[in-house]
Amino acid sequence: MRAIPITMLLKKKIPLAYIFNKVKYDLLNVLILSLLVIVITEHYKDLFPIMPLTIPAFIGTAISILLSFKLNQSYDRWWEARKIWGAIVNDSRSLFIQIKNLLPAGNDAAIKKIAYRQIAWCYSLGQSLRGLNALDNLKAYISAEEMEALKNHQNKPLALLSFHARDIKFLKEIGQLESFSQLHIDNTLTRLCDAQGKAERIKSTVFPVTYRLFLHGIIYLFVVTLSISLEDVAGYFELPLLLVISAAFFLLEKSASYLQDPFENRPSDTAMTAIARTIETNIKQLLGETDVPAAPSNNSFYLL
Image (cartoon, rainbow, N blue to C red; front, side, top):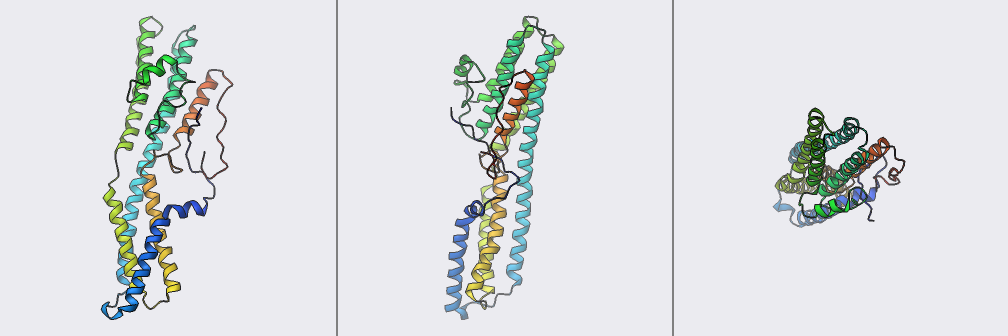
């Protein structure tokens, strides 16, 4: 059985290689651009007016404001995603507690069926949001009939919630649930459906690509103007300075770009699988089972 990916940054030292790999192509562009400017200004110095440092300083200030706005908006999207999955944790626990306490004795099979299907829903939703196969690793939690039925649905997590609603309706019809109890459970299912819709909205709403392109263009303009302003500075000092300053801007932009898409299966991702694993552990222990998932390994700077 293929392992389910888990991604989440941990409070550990991030390798420099990982950081460098995120901006290496941008820095290569900066290096080439800087060398061209240095060569051109050296051979055609008379054609270029004196560039005061106030001009690149002004452009740098504009870049800082744009980056601040993008970081703020991106973090809002990431934090909203995390709050959505926090609500999923609460409602998943609530659903199990309601089913267990509101159904009379003798319904252990129905309770376990719904509990395991809820675990499957959490994993399936995470896989679906990451663009992966939403049916991977679900055979241990739902029946073969439901697995087969899910293949006919485009939205697998939504279908699993509909199976919940079908079973709750059946339990009400055979007199195992009172109307008031059914209402409470339906409200919990509604909140779970709302959480799924909110997560799907974040996934499908693309942050304007033009914003990133314009920001990169302004950073390159900043590099050019700063390089011209530093024409009297030796190249062996100017090039590292340009690379370090531009690297700071590109790293901040890259961090914002990663935060704005919290469901992309990257180290900065919302830890949906880790959260689903926590829900699985909680539900299985409430069922009285001892076969709970092992804690994920954290030898790296993010969960694997």
